[in-house]
Image (cartoon, rainbow, N blue to C red; front, side, top):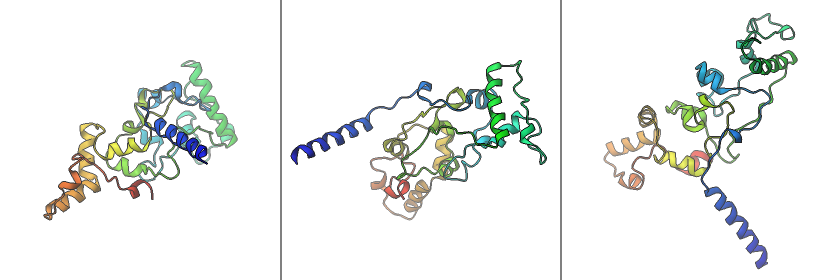
Length: 228
């Protein structure tokens, strides 16, 4: 019995140590996707805003994956019209002369469109089922996509830039994670936690205890905020 408990203890210790390690990832850690979608071309070179493709991020708990129809709207002429027939679709951008690699990958998109199939993208960012990260709350608070997802506009292959661990979330809520000046100003103005503290202070309440340890706290760290 004691031996079993010792083994369990060692396992828990190993898990705890692993969760405390510094997190670092590169493009090499990104999974291979069914189509080589270069964010560096779309979000970087062509300066497409993130919300063009992930258009539910400001009104839904999850940021959507763009549909095949949205993609062919740029790559297949006439695909957005009501009478478009997917079986007759042909690639118009990029042309074969411009870049053979991009042309070859874009042809895969056309094939999915013709077959009426969704692209089986490999998910990269995923929090545990017992935790919730509502995208719309963070986007509407003024945070930029790159704050969590890294410089996607420079990535050929997207990878998990941030650890997504509990401590990573808590550090940002406590105000320890640096933000750009515009982001910080937006969060200070829109955060329900900051507004609540300001209201309590204006009503004559003593809020020094709340902010004694983390004077720059931006959001609540109550368990029910993420685990509900």
